Amino acid sequence: MRAPLRGERARLTALYAALLVLAGALLTGVVYALVQEGLYSTISTAVTTAVPARRLQDLPDPWATAGPAAPLPSAVPASPGPATGRWLVPSETLAITRSVSDAAGSAALDRLLTVSVAVLAGYALLSVPVAWWAAGRVLRPVGVITDTARRLSGENLLGGAPGGSWGRIALDAPPGELKRLADTFDGMLGRMEQLVSAQQRFAANAAHELRTPVAVQRAAAEIGLAGEPSPERVARIRSKLIEVADTSERIIEGLLLLASSDQGIRERRRVEVDGLARETAAALAGEADGRGVRVVVRAGPLTVDGDPVLLERLLHNLLANGVRHNVPGGRVEVRTGPAGIEVANTGPVVPPESVPLLFEPFRRSAARTHAPGEGAGLGLSIVDSIARAHGATASASANPASEGGGLTVRITFP
Image 1 (spheres, helix red, strand yellow):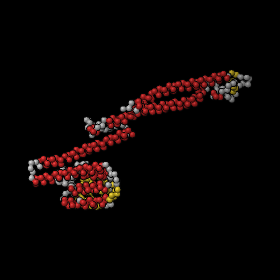
Image 2 (cartoon, rainbow, N blue to C red):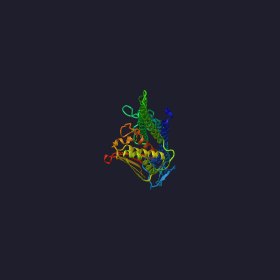
Image 3 (cartoon, rainbow, N blue to C red):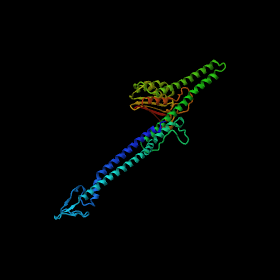
Image 4 (spheres, one colour):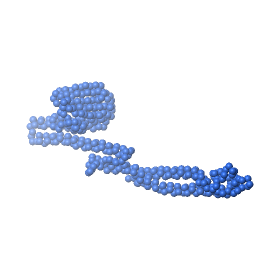
């Protein structure tokens, strides 16, 4: 942890205090210059109200005379002059008046300078605690963010704190840069929570899915082959073990494919998706006929930069889901075009609220029955991962019962 006097708060305090002192010094200098500029004329105006002169700067140094056209003010008596009838003003009186004005101006400036320097010194001392307090107020949200990040863990990230979630800042502050930073941090924590939660569910579901075939294999070996089984019984157990091994292999292959697609695409090339759609539909035609499902392909031109193997797997999973989760006499329609890929199938009615969950690993629209050929529940999660690897988005919507039920999945490329 940084020392308090060497951290950002100390640096902000030094910066704020320096700016405050500089502003005070500039203000003091400006006030002193303005007062000095107008002080002499102000004192002259005040003094000439009691001194027999028009303006101090017009006062003569020797004896001055004033004609009849310019009568002297009556405030100061003048001495009578020669027989010409003119009046004379003593130069001593004028000199004293000038000296008093100069002394008053100098004393006022000295007093102003002394008071200004004293006030500036006090202002400088007061600016340090004020700057320290202001820096603390500015950095308070940063401290809240730091404390929240320090105490994060898997439990409180998922809202495990009593009385509320410790994994969020929820900064109570006016709009600004730090408020946006805290809200962005909260949004990041929300996405992390979703990822951690999905990872935990994925690990739990994967362990459950792999534990089932292992348990079946163990039971078949311990019970089915106990004692001296007949050749027919050995053959049944053998076929059962092979079937369970195939199921485990499909789960593992799906997990590996999901992991590889999550890592992104290393090499891209131009892929004609419409051609892949026709080939994939032709490859699944036999299974579709066996289930009584009709596959319709409306392949418009669509070419993207990507991995042909992953794109083929995406189309295969979409068509296979449409065929397998259908009803006898149902239909699967595949469309490609500039907007992307759309696969719509009839089948059981899917609750709209459960549609987003179908893209999570091991999620199914119906409970698992462990029937032969049943998928592992990774189909749409692999589709979503491959779509994201190609910069596309996967979405789904439930078809109403009036249109035959089922699901419509769309892959939108940028």
